[in-house]
Image 1 (cartoon, rainbow, N blue to C red):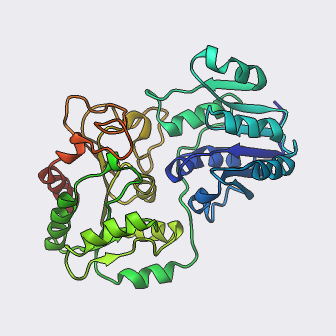
Image 2 (tube, helix red, strand yellow):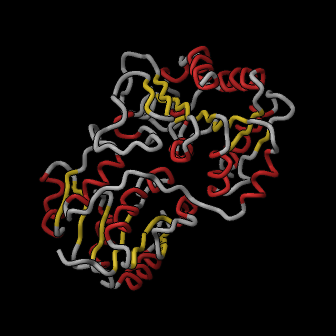
Image 3 (cartoon, rainbow, N blue to C red):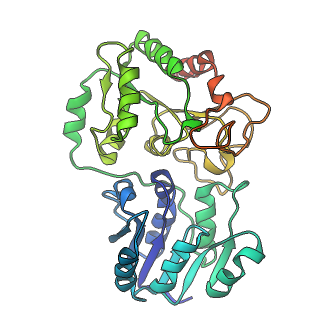
Length: 355
């Protein structure tokens, strides 16, 4: 394939998913340093790419796009790219790629009877693996189709306003707790967070709580903050993702559930305690800092440590079930997380602090 001058990468999922595409973007930048490299994402995920030096332009569309939104996007894309890459097998990103370029790479559904037509329209394709290949490696395998060498490093958002973050937290050593994932079935217990918060304070660490600006999340975190030491800093909804990256990079440790911010924390190099239940770690574990191997960092079952990531998994026999909680919906609780003991988390904190 001839060297592309204009490349579009399409990644239309959540914040964490967008972050996990950055090794693909960085690999393309290293292979084609003079190319125009643009990215098409949902408008509510652009913050994860703030200050990314590998991207020339961010193109956005609402997650619930109307006809007028799509029409404007189709006109903007207008076959102006030499190469379009889709990182998902869904219909919508594939349709956008058709309008972007005559040369397309992407992933397709694993069953030919559901994705045969996409195989026909893609220049080269890769079957989507939802169980046995980490998302970072799945993306990089797309680039192997055109012999682009892989770069495994995630690129977090960046800010120039570092001083403001330092003023927020002061000089005392601190731990960051991210207590609220987007979906209930990924939540640990409120009582667990409160006990761990007091334990960290007893170990000499100030507590910093992080979270998004949605009212449900703000209220959830405020309830926990009221039951923690007085010097706890609640930053829910108050810092950008780029500022949060700076905050995380100077923390003593971070604790969080299966959420995009846990992926972000891992990318900064801070010691990360990740609390996992129904989610398959092979596919969706945080990518460890400086892990540069073409193999999955984590196994499917068991608590494991790789580089800066300490993954604690629930101990039920059904873990990981890959399902949305015990009641099979996003607002369901997960027994494997509800029974994940505080003592296991304390022991992991202890192992980090003595290093």
